[in-house]
Length: 204
Image (tube, rainbow, N blue to C red):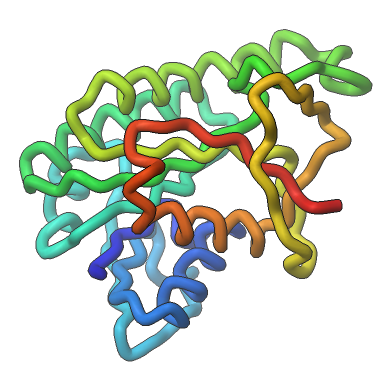
């Protein structure tokens, strides 16, 4: 499968690229600064662009079968802006499959504790932007899957699981980035996840 990875220079995005190549996919890494992208591979190409710009995304989507979106951060309206551009670009190119990573803070399962209770305005701001992106995907005609992750950590893979619908998660729940990358790739070709939102956390 030809896969475009957004946020490929991020800590989770790089792992998605590595694992996708290992799984036999042909990968295009979409990055703002190619000089900072150190991965190489026979089936890897790099697309330079800004995920907020429609034309950059349209160009990168040529010949792609699917998109994995790992963009994250606290920049104001980043998720809403990039998701709107992505949906429009995918429509223009006729690409339908997209798997998007989001944060557990934007789910009904989230229960703020500790520092997250001390900075509710920041937490609400992050959730508001992610929710805006989620709504754009849900309203599209694309074959989308949204994978919410608990707190991401850069540790070796230790497994992951789906969180039950009535299960609460806090800042103490976490998933390792390697496991999150594996999960994003696993759902990519799983048609049963089309049009669904999943919440994942680590096994420990």
